Length: 234
Image 1 (spheres, rainbow, N blue to C red):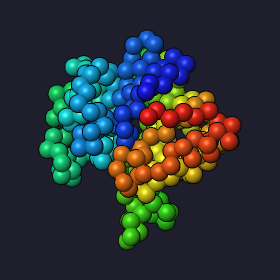
Image 2 (cartoon, helix red, strand yellow):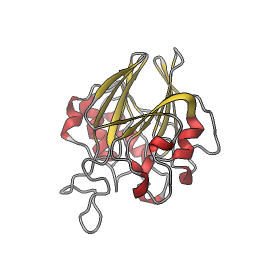
Image 3 (tube, one colour):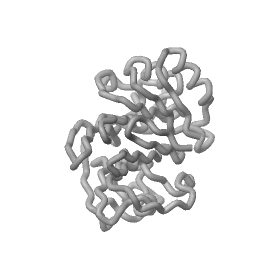
Image 4 (cartoon, helix red, strand yellow):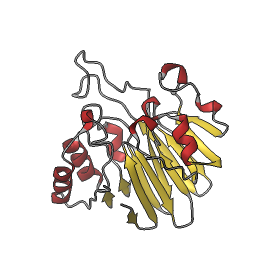
């Protein structure tokens, strides 16, 4: 299923892998991979102008190569370290692509695209920690991305709880994680959508594996009852 929203075409491939394409032809991928979850299902479009990787759990060199053009720019969070990821042996700088590392509170203009980052983490005092109280996503180890394509600002918060910084985020298209356990759950994401009042909500990061299974239909009903447009890309 492909979702068309104003000047942007949106595809969700599973987990956090999203493709955005503007009418002017710019193609952006959010968090392609990892390949072990089959989110790209053998696809090798190699059409991405800008590839955004929020943190180490979503960093996958093979998936990046599947979607990136030869002249693509790959933007990764500054913390990503291949030595800390068992399933990969190539760091971002080994990709034979132009790579930029970013912190979690920056903004840029990249040709026709505007880009900003936000912090993304689990509050150690919040509900999304393991049995020892350790967050799956510690502060400083990832980011969210906002990108404006042909006048549409899409915001992927990353693998994160709802945070105070989200209260002031400009957003037309909200792509919240709703799977819970390691991110905000569907109820928290619905409340965030209510506060941000985007023009459209498309949930992601759910049902790819058992830990993040959720009732997406219930999320849609919850958001719609709050008067916010919402769609499922399934």
